[in-house]
Amino acid sequence: MEKLRVGSAEHKELLCRFFTDSFVKFEPENIKFPELSAGNLARLKSLPIWEEAVRTEASTALLVQTFGRKVRDADFKEAIAMNGFEEGRHAAMLAGLTRRYGIPIPKIDVRPHDDPEWGFLKVGYGECFDSFFGFGLFAFARDSGIFPPELVMLFEPIMQEEARHIIFHANWVAYTRSEQPLLERGAFAFKEALAVGIQTWSRIKTALRVGSAEDNFTMSAADSLGDISAKTLIEICLRENDRRLARYDPRLLRPTLMPSMARAMLKVL
Ligand SMILES: [Fe+2]
Ligand SMILES: [Fe+2]
Image (cartoon, helix red, strand yellow):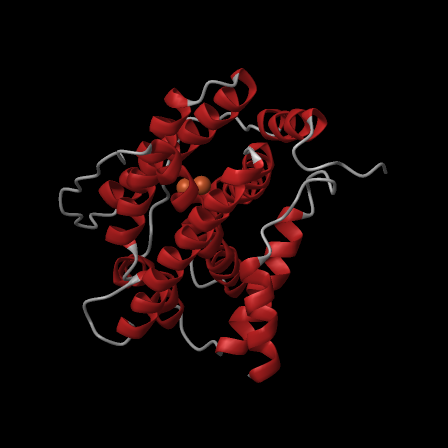
């Protein structure tokens, strides 16, 4: 297969086509959440992820949609608007689930960023972190039978959409950087590094708070799912990340930060 030059017209065309062609139609309003046994319901409610998950999806939807409205390039505009639409569906799915199972969520206030491009850049790196762990936790929930498959599989399309989002983001970043005039390329690379730094720090803070009852998200979600070692979880995350991203054109770039950090961690564990 011929190699693709990052930043070329072919790169942009392939990227936008991959994204729009892999769109899956579904309406969160039509999803029927199954009846759960008392035990399953209690386990679902005890997962400490719901508020953070609803907040993350609502905020991501707003940031991506805001950027989609600002983008001038027609191809990118269509793909990023679609990305934002999908994030809106994720938020609606989670809102539907928490309503259906009586999981209380406080009112969540999300705001757009003053600089929509910066908002999109930053939120995409956040998705790279969260999706990597999300893929692994989802596979664990699916394969361990800890939740009924008819509930878990409702979220399969969302997981796969996140795989598309992070591929899109990795390529959009590389394309956009290459488009900058030479003198401004360094400034853009600095913004990338800053976005990665902010998102890394925010996940480190979460990891440090794991164990204290008030916090949350993917790492403490692993705790609630039962007995799973860090090594096994990382192996599942890597395997699932590779499997989900392998579906798309190999000429497109893949996010590399989380998989390389995970491989380095496996060497130590
Ligand atoms: Fe999402
Ligand atoms: Fe996403």
